[in-house]
Length: 225
Length: 80
Image (cartoon, rainbow over all chains, first blue to last red; front, side, top):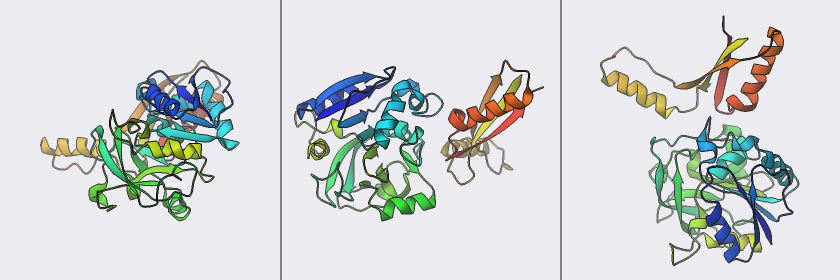
C-alpha cells in the first residue's frame, strides 16, 4: 500500500501519521503543499495541525494550495482520503466534504481523550472494528463543532455516512457526552461514496501501547484490508 | 477603487463568541441590549477603474474565499 501525507506550514501531526503508516508497512511519502503532482497513492492523508495559523477560517487557506487541486482530483476518481482534525477542516473548506466545523460550543480549545462509538463498519476505514464498539481516542481542537443543514444531516444519518459519534463508557450518545456541540454528536463523516473520511479525533495518537493506547490502530489496519 | 466587505454568520448558525460578548456587555450594565452577532470585516483596494467589473471580482472573492457560504453571509459596500 502506498500512502501520501500532505504537509502544510503549520501541520503538526504529519510525522505522527507517517509513523503510524510506516509501522503498518505503508510505503509513505511526505508531500509539501507547493508540489503540483501527487505520487500514485492508495491513501492520501491530510494531517492535523494549524495550517497557515488558522488564518481566515481553519483550513481555508490550505484548501486553495497547489497540491489540494491534485487531492481533489484523486478524491473524485475514488482514491481513499483521510482528513484528521485540521485535515477534516481542509477537506470541508475545499468542498470534498459537506458542512462546516464551527468554534467549539464551550469556546475552549479541547485537548483530551474522549470516547466514540463506531456507528458502521461497512466501509474501507472501519471494517476491522465492530459496529457499536467504543473506542478511546484523543481530540485536540478549537473548531470541531460540526454543523450541516437538515437535509444533509438526514442524508448522513440514512446512508451510514457517520462512522463515529461521541459517547460515554456505556455508549450513551447525548448532549452530556458531546464535547464540542457537534450536531448529533458527530465525530466523523464520509462523502457519499465513502472514499473520503473526515474525523476530528486523532487515530494516529493511539497506535502504540508504549506511547498511549491502541484503539486507533484498527483504522490503519482496516485501510490495508 | 475601494470596497469593504462584512462577513457574518447566518441567522440559524450558533455564534458562541457573539453570545459571550453580548453577555459581558450586559454584565457591564447595558441592560437594553438584545443580542450581538460577531463577524469579520475586510477592506479591499482594487487597481481597477471599471466599478462593475471590480464589484464582480469582489463578489467572486467573497464566494470563493472570504466567506464560507454554508455558514456565513457577506455584504459588499463600495467605499467613498
